Length: 236
Image 1 (cartoon, rainbow, N blue to C red):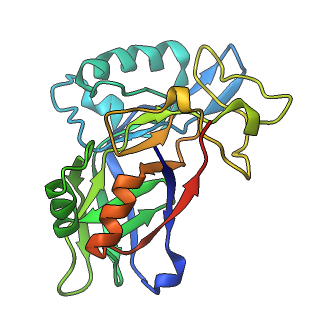
Image 2 (cartoon, helix red, strand yellow):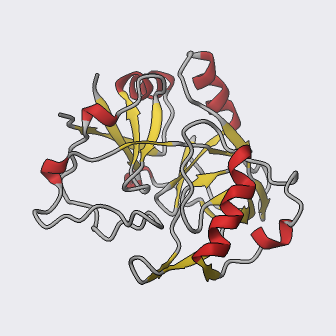
């Protein structure tokens, strides 16, 4: 199996930009185990938190003691898709905000959020690609003929190989999951951690890295879907 990292195609000349945040989110945390205050979780735009009683607890970004953070995690955990991972600052629900400019079929927002126009998403789903699920973004446009953008829900499912990590690598904090290691320049996937039932996923240890299979990349090229590039990613 061949894999590719998906990145914004900055040479395409598109001017589109999305300024939006998800409707709900877990707070950040101060962790007594690693003594860090941080937030930087995963995005689950298709997860609807309306069944949760105290929705106000998920509306304001803030740091919380880890016990409160863990309590809130248990409230949303039953609503998550299989394989989902919770981290401080994880987001839920549709992206809400504003957008303007000229967009490609794919839109990379803040480099770790992948959006796609409705027509492109439907074409890819018709190709039988696995793991493609999106939530319509609630965006205000200052232009006519604005695109209908969907934020893809990309689950964390793979990890980098130990060989590309620094010699002094320390595993994530066992209490809060914080990874203090910067993203290496040369990435190598750990093949033993990679999923076999999806064509699109993000790394569990470096959430900003979005990975697809050759099947996904080939379908995008065949359909002429633009806005992103596909860079080969070795695995061992």
